[in-house]
Amino acid sequence: MVQFAQARLDASFAALSDATRRGVLEQLGRSDASITTLAEKFHMTLTGMKKHLGILEQAGLVSTEKVGRVRTCKLGPRSLDEETAWLESYHQLWESRFDELDKVVEQLKRKEKVNGRRKRE
Amino acid sequence: MVQFAQARLDASFAALSDATRRGVLEQLGRSDASITTLAEKFHMTLTGMKKHLGILEQAGLVSTEKVGRVRTCKLGPRSLDEETAWLESYHQLWESRFDELDKVVEQLKRKEKVNGRRKRE
Image 1 (cartoon, each protein chain N blue to C red):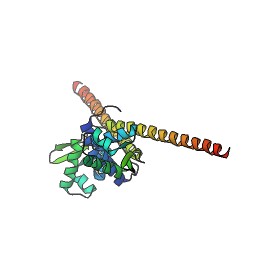
Image 2 (cartoon, rainbow over the protein chains, first blue to last red):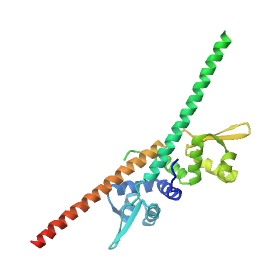
Image 3 (cartoon, chains in turn yellow, brown):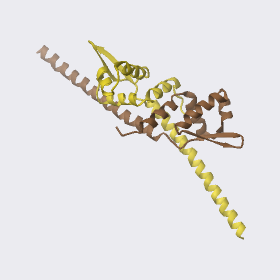
Image 4 (spheres, rainbow over the protein chains, first blue to last red):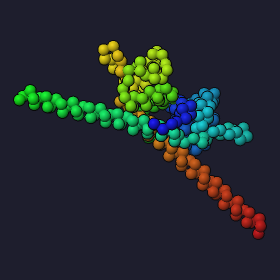
């Protein structure tokens, strides 16, 4: 497998392990939003939403900016390319693993057939 | 975005948020292994490894089977297709979002150019 920045993967997969946080990312993918708007949209207190945003911000997935009295949230600089690459690399391992098992099963079947024939002879 | 089974995504992204657990998946992608082998490989106590394996098993990423006195671990039934789909879907949102920003910047630049020209005239 490719070498990955493990701490970064830890942080981003942890950030993605919550439906609200994934929802916030999808929302910010459509348009920037204030913390208040996000809190209302996800039926949450401001404190609760700030906690989620902190986790997303630390993982580089969201960035926030205070303009006047309003803090606006937008998508951060990371597009999750490395995470996608990890999953794709894993998928290949997974497939080759199951291909191998298929081959073993195939061989066992062939052996049984031969044994069955020998017994009949 | 596509509709996803949120609880399943929660569990699998949480399972992936740890370098040891990702390492175990990569290892099992190469060959099945006993808990003892995995614990040794990742310099961990049996109890620590069992905890990680429990999280991976709950997320459907690993399955274990006891043959005689040895419990063997292998890759589970889930190949993380949905997780990859979520990331790809997010990537598209992210790209279109930044394309939009590029367009806004482009428009601002054009406006500035026009204004600059007007001032000179």
